[in-house]
Image (cartoon, rainbow, N blue to C red):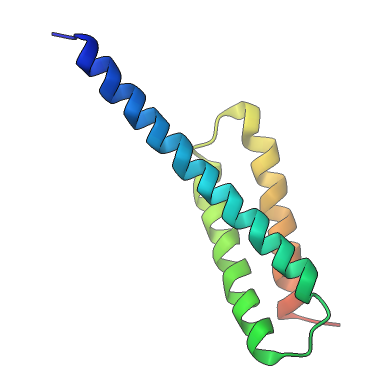
Length: 94
């Protein structure tokens, strides 16, 4: 039997999901900023760290792209491409 408490749990779950998505995209935004900041660095440790984090970001975006609604799928796939380009920029510098 559904009562008001079921609806509150559902709303709490939705709030938690929204919060997790928000943190996920905030982390990606911060990573993108770090990429821009350190783009031309010669520091091997920074480059290796960013390469690993960018690769993880690509994998994370690829893994969630199938569960995103059609409305946002194009934007997420574009993000995948952008982070792949950042990864390859670090992984295979010219």
